[in-house]
Every structure is written in C-alpha cells, then in structure tokens.
Image (cartoon, rainbow, N blue to C red):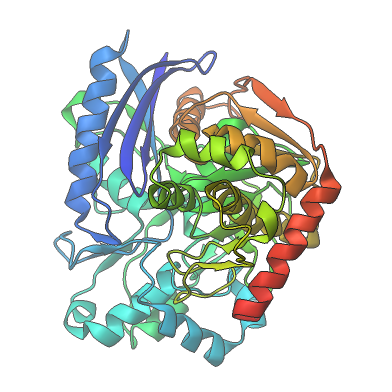
Length: 470
C-alpha cells in the first residue's frame, strides 16, 4: 500500500509517496511559497496541488491514504461562507507582540502556562486573534471559523465540509487549548475577540479518520488522516523515544522531546505541546536558525559550503567573537524587536574564518540553551538527533556535539515532516493501535571536547546578557 504525506511549511509544500510496509519514499514533489509573514491561503492550495501531482505522477501505484502536516500557530480566519477574511498571519509574523504582553499582564504567565501549557508570544494564534480584534474589527465582526494552516489544507482536501478538524498536536500551539484535558478553551477566544465566539475545528485522535479526500482529483477517495503540526510530524517520522531530543535547524530552530506527562513552565521558554501519538512534546523554539548561516555566507561573499570550510578553519570560540543571532527578532527569549549583534570584536580577530565560525556557534548556542531548558522540565537527554537544512553543513555537524555535550546523531537526509504525515496516514489506514515502525539510519558524531564547548556557551551567555539582559 502507498500513502502520501504533505508538509505545508513556511517556505514550500512538499509531498512524499511512501511504501507503508517499510517507510521507503518512492516519489516526491515540491512547490515553493513566497517568503512572507502573511499570505493568501490559496497559495498553499495551489502549491499543494502542484507538489501532489509531481509525487503522484512518479508513484508506482495508487495512493490509499493521505495526511497533512503544517507550520504551527498561523491564523486562518474564515467568514461564514468559508472564504478567508484576510491573508493568514504566519507564526513568524511578530505584529501581535503587544497583545501577547497584554495577555500575560491580565492573566499572569504562571496561570496561562498552567491552563494552556504556553506563555503567549507573538508567534501563537491567540495573540493574533487579539490583534485582529483590535486592528481589524470589521474582519473580527465577520469571523465565523478559525483554522490553523494544516487544518485549512486538510479541510480543502476533504471538500470543505461543514465540520473542520484538527489534532491535539497542532491545537496545543494555539494558546486556547488545554494539553492536560485535550479540550479547547473557547473562553479565551471570546475574551480577546470582545465576546465573539468563532467556531473551532473538531479535535480528532492521533489515528482517527477525517473522512475521504474529495477536493483534489488526484487523491479523491483516499482515506484522510487528521494531520498535525510540523514539529509533531517530525517527531512521529523519526519515531523518537525517551532520551531522544530532536534539534531541527530550518527556517526556525527547535529542540523537542516526547514526554508521557504535560509540562508547563512560567517563563515561556518551554512550550508544553502535545505530540501526534497521544503523548506530549515539550518544545523550545528560536526564530533564527538556517537563515543565520545564509546571511553570514552572503555577507562573506561565499556559499554555504564555503562558509563551512571557513568555520572549520577557525578555532573553537571564534577568536573571542560571539554572534547573538537575533536577525529576525527572537521568540526564545521573547525579544521580538531584537536584532543580531556581534560582540568581542578586535583588530586581530575580525577574520572571515572567525566570523563564519561565530555564526555557526551562535546559532547552535541558542539551541543548546533550548536543550538545557528541556532538561530543567524533566527531559532526559541521552542523544541529540540533528535534522533540518542546516544539519547538512559539515561545520554544524562537527561543532554541535561539543556544544550540546552529548553524542549527535544525524539521520539520513529525508523530509521528516512529510514522512511523519505519511506515517500517520499509514497508521490511519491500517487501523492499528500503534503507528508503523519504520527504521532509520544515522550518522553518529561523538560529544568530543565538551570543555571547549562549555567555554563557548559561557562566552555566548555573557554576551547575550550584556546586550539584552537575559
């Protein structure tokens, strides 16, 4: 049996057709999205159709089940006819930072963390709803239904049924869901919308059917899974267990692990998400990951391979340079208006090699702080699984183990979000108690010189405190 997984991400839609017996990817498709922080959802639908057609055209057999994983937190507001009221606001749109701060002032970070698993920041859906009510009341007055990006694509695949659906994983990133009870908290939506009560999607179980595809000719009749958020799908795709921490280096950076128990943490560093299997997924997210390397390579007049070569030519610590990589503001720590800062500059250390290494170290230090935060909420860290586009860099692979302080395993290259969506589709189609066990291969990098890594991280912390006081 062949199944299809769709990853509707910030940058593109990717689709993979997978043999459900062994998890082998047999065909793929991809279509780009424009680099914006707000976007017409129709762009996702067009890209979805194109990516699916590419994958289906190369597949050796018909697809029998499909699921969608999507970028988390985005706000897709619909009117009573199912049309978007405005462009969707994506997770990396920070205009709702004031509304996030107002929610904390009104309720208290500790109370919100206890209720929702989260402390509001601009990324989450609830502050975006508050922004809509305050800045576009004409749209808020017409608001009928609120969906997340993956919900919307799934809803379109299902033929725009009366009842939309979602799952615990993606719902847990909204700010109006209780990970402990698995239920919506609609009173929070009503509060920020001035008493308006939008319809929210039905929350399905991890392997529940969401009907059949009726909205895309190439897939019509295929069983439709509930879908999930991108990080939840990546965890499912890799089949992570206790002791595994995934560090993903894509547009954003994330560090996450599975847990049998919900987590809440009042500083907001660790988001208490749910996963795609019925467990929980404590997660730390930074806004700046692979783009830090892209920007530095551009500044140095080279490409990513050249940046890696330069970085590996410099000693640990980058000659005293520390890069605080908040090029797009930052989510963890919550500094939406921050900028990147290079510290420790002297006439003797301003070399391309040191700057290249500082960019790699700065990016990884932010994620290493995230791994440490997971430890502080009870997560056991035995190894780090490194994925995402920046994990392909030889410099990142060489430098990461000393900064994380544990062995780093780099799984074979794959679209793990789309693969996780495909695994969910196979699980739904099989009707089994557990998802299929698809085996992966890893490249292992030992922890190495953890003392030098600790020194680099300490210099980074001192620089961050001097600049931002955190």
